[in-house]
Image (cartoon, rainbow, N blue to C red; front, side):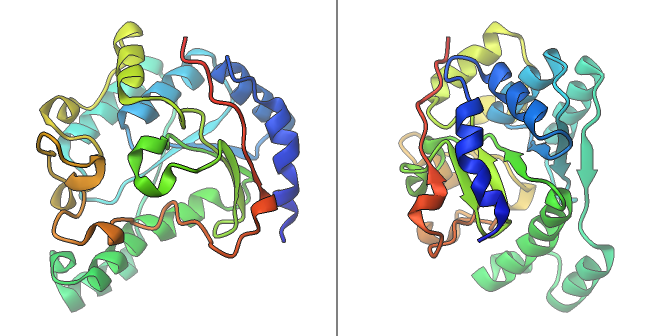
Length: 254
């Protein structure tokens, strides 16, 4: 097992459930230059970006630009950079890999099979993510337990064996209402698609608004069976030992 898995206990000790800013700051101070935060400009990611930028925490923030995002997502990105005057580094798909895939399968082949869709995600998301995480030890995410049934038992701090990195999910136990209330309270810019029924926002061709009573993930890859609805960014290795995962207390939302 990677030496990074040994960081779990140390990082768990640095987390203060009542204070996300302090928790992230403690981690950054302990692992200088090794911490990154990924944003898709969702409600959750905007909240965490606000905390990082307002407190001037030295975390490298990045996003994955797949080339097929909503115009509203690009506007949110632009508004965020303008408001906080902080850098958000963008990672893009390999031009050669994308050109070959589109030439072979066509621009919308992801509708035709799960295999095509996963290959598209691998080119547009997973490979750029691997470049973004290279040489890093801690990855801060905006994941919440409510995002997926498979995340109900997810720990606050965990070792990701697939990417050989420690992941910290500061908003894991927050509800959607708590997240949106915080955004309103602090006047944080957010994607206007959220007001139109879009909950989980990804690429334009693969995302739709959800209908009343539908599951959180219903708006992503809606033409596929529910058990296949992951792009691969947060895959959990079933062979990872349970002792490589650390549970921690929920963070207070006050």
